[in-house]
Length: 310
Image (tube, rainbow, N blue to C red; front, side, top):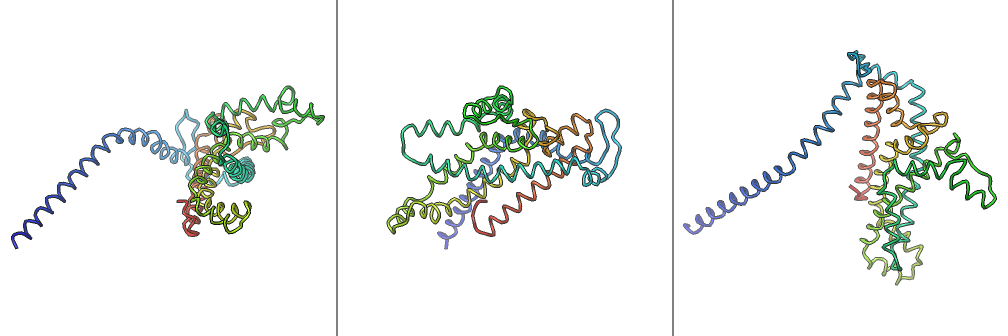
């Protein structure tokens, strides 16, 4: 009996000691990350909350704000400029997201081989993603310049007529999609490459032994294993597409004839150029809610279909 009580007391003391150590470790961890959390909260959470209150006012940044309630949100629904910007954003998203996923997957499959200089090829594919979107847009402006750009020079050499590219309302958005793909393919390719290298080799070898062709192996073995990565990439690239601003700002400034004016660029022009901070904040919050709903919807779909991406 005494031995049992001694063992119990020893166990209790050990549990308390372990709990105290975990609490001390937790306090030490929070001491390191606490200042960073305060900075992040002060630079993101507080401005976001403040912007919501601004979205319910009419304010030019100088005079006293005037409370208009939900008037900015009601006006936004009937604003043709907002509707046009949303349409342009959806067109960009519809072209960019599937293309970035498909091309990134193809590039990853090509780079998942044991060939000479494979490290150089992988680095070359990823370098455009590291470069800033602003630098990419400035470089692309020279490449697609209708007068002296490299793209038209190449067309002239093969006997094809020169194009207007970023100066054409019909061609500007597809060109921006191409520029965005050049900068983002590296990201999707690296993500898919990591997923490909994580696929158990025994599955591929078993399919080959059963007589499956390379196409069937990819379709029935590799592609299902890439499902979680595809969902994650689709969510990430959709958010990236909805927030398109840098390339538009450095190439077309929303032109020509507002053909490339995306919703984020419209927010920038309305709030900071037109000094309509209340209305711009209302549009920004609406974009935030839509992006959040899309993300939550794709996450729920992933969990219900048991894809396992999140």
